[in-house]
Image (cartoon, rainbow, N blue to C red; front, side, top):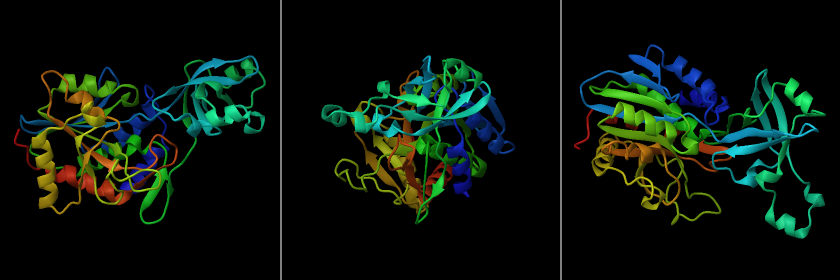
Length: 345
């Protein structure tokens, strides 16, 4: 089941530039299911199923948003930078894990207590620059003895948990959901075409791995797998995000208001037609929010026809993201069935 795979991936740790533990899981999962697995210079993991001359790139980014040690003061408190798009109040008072030279070290993010804030400070909230991590050390030397140094990556200490109605919560569903879809699809897939499953690095800090890998592979078309924002809960209007959890995977037409991806119409028709033929529920999205690996891929070389298959996920870029497992299963089906044919480019 995809649930156990997603649990394993969500509970793993891998911020941008330090995706190794996620890489190891993917490599183990795909062993024996693909013709070749290799790592490129950037750190992307490329799994290949060989077929005819028509090639399709499937991309899912491995990295999660996190933190990195910037400075350790004399009293042992640790300052950090954010890696990826954090909303600062989400970080305040979280428990975190340092992935240091001697293994994992736990800490808590602190800041000025609300009780000691004046009215104006309370209105503004605590900025990430004003936060620090407390690992229980009494001085900088004790921090060093724990194996923590400048540049040590830091992730949030949260684990995968089941909710009601086949829904689950955890950290890094953005984009371990896409990674899980791609792993399972590659295991099930029987395509006549050459398929490159690329598990990319550093998406959260500039779509970097997708840019370099697509330049090297130069596929005929590409599909990124990722998550997207639904408008089915309080605080957001359906007119701003018409997607819903549990209504099927999402095919992107436009993201970031056109500043990111304007998807290939033949690819949209191909995926939509496959969904209709196989009675797979799908949703179409014209979004004004963020972008995915497809944005970098479709601008590579002379242009690569691209789109995205996403999973509607609540509360993204937080440690408590929520999705519906049936959407992930249907996303796998959509990829597998689509790759039995080819788009009319």
